[in-house]
Length: 460
Image 1 (cartoon, rainbow, N blue to C red):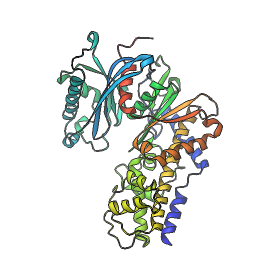
Image 2: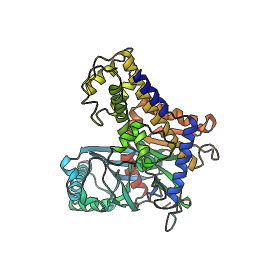
Image 3: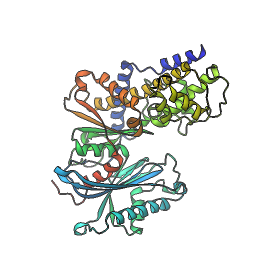
Image 4: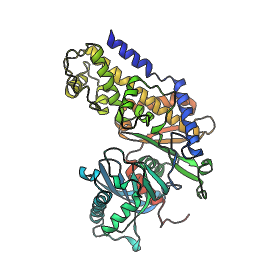
């Protein structure tokens, strides 16, 4: 049976035995060291974030956050009450960016963001006054590739996602925002520029001092962790007083010969906007899992008759099957797999499938998602190995905070990731490692880093 052969080959080529995952983890740790050694030393960039002080939970005062990472952006305000009270209050507002601004000019985009931020501040501060003439402070989460020179400056390397504002490339995004805020008459200082992984790390560290890494598994994937400053050979200049530095790994670009890459991954990569890049991300993140499954189904439909006579227009459309669709099918608990039947009909216009075919489809979702989750766990094991916290040396509690829709909403992915990490570390060592979901790291994390970097901070 041709269809059974296709699934058997997929199962074999996506296999992730523990021995292979340990090799992937070791390769990740090696690439981390190479990236810290010198600029361009590794496919994993290991960028300095210039964040050398993470929140401790003792911060006090009013701080703002701005989160720009996609077609929406968020502004938020947090009131921090120090040790006992932590976050006293938080208000936020989410706004869509008008599509024409995503390909217009830099000043138009930042002008729009600054005007919305000014409205939010005016609404929030009605009838209240900032104490003793302090300038408001803002943390800015900007989830696009930037080259940072300090904690509050960074030049845009390139746009990703749906943005293509040519005149912003090579400019300092903090300076652009600062100028736009001044034009609005908004008295606000950008205290820190971070990305969502650093924000997740900061947001979780505020509540738990044992947090060592912040990781995103959403549309894309990335990780940030706390490194000893003296373990960064490429660091130039004075070492920070804290002795620590947050590293933004940009680990989506990780590659190792141990990664189980199939014909479907190869064709997806060849036809992508960035062939040969972000291979780890293409195997593990929400943007691609549905697309990999679509490619398997297309091959099934061409090499067997299990779908009968169908119009393949939808099945041939790239990215038409999305990860939330495969999650819904994968989690279908109805006895006759009714949800699978509905999704096939609704999204791919494949009707009249047998129960046998629907079971096969669930198995395909399982193979692709399990591989992603197990490779994701190997990445986490790589970070722990690099830090000596994989149980071999350090017996301290280590917490990894994870945010992103794939981890939050795809239960079989997150459960498999957690179980695989225990398998890789072993029962004993895994007692010291905690994986926790950190909600809204990129928003609150920005405001908290603004607090820890505040110019008004009491020097301890």
